[in-house]
Structure formats: structure tokens, C-alpha cells
Length: 133
Ligand SMILES: [Zn+2]
Image (tube, rainbow, N blue to C red; front, top):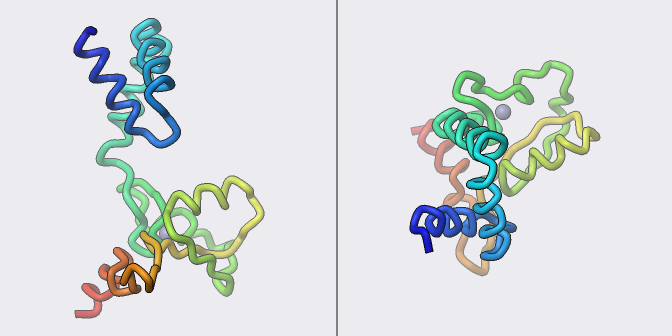
């Protein structure tokens, strides 16, 4: 096996939704078509790294130069309706539906009293507690 190809397959297989076989097919496609697939992926990964963060107000994904995010600064959104979600990726799914015009709050984790995961352990709650002290 060619080590760089094997490393690429292993890295891709860590992504959600890609098993070992899918990762292998994706890796082979990337090396077969570097201009069409590999280089655009490299550019997108470079642009994403260090440029995407969570909004300091709601926890949604945003860019470093847009904090608070577009949802938080959109005056047309109904601030009386708050949608509380587990993860920022949930906001992406809801926004894609186009049916919600309120505001969001991403907890950054799952509340689970059974597993002793209370609100004080969630990243957003810890951020708020730091701001208060
Ligand atoms: Zn926001």
C-alpha cells in the first residue's frame, strides 16, 4: 500500500458517514482527479481552518469577522421566539428548511441528568459564567 494514500483513506474514514470502503473510494477519486477534486478540497479546508467559529451570542457557526453572526444581527428575525438546539449543526439544518424566523441558542452539548451532564458543564453555560465573574 502507498503510505500517503493509506493516510488519506484513514483521515477520510474518520469523517461521519464515511466508512472504510467509502473513504477508500473517495481517496482514490481525489488522487485520480487532483485538479477537479483534490485542489478545491485543499482550498476549502484551508479556508475553513481558523476562519469558522461559533457566534459568541447564540453559538451558531459563523466566521471570525462576523461575530455576532448574521442571525443575531438580522433585525427581521423575531426575537420573541427562541429555538434551543443541542449543536450548531442543528441550526444549519433548520436554516436550510427556511421555515424558522426566530433566534437560536446552541447549547454545545446534550443535557443528560443520568450521565451527570448538567447545564453547568455545557460550553455555552461555562462561557456565560466566565462573562459574569
Ligand atoms: Zn449568533
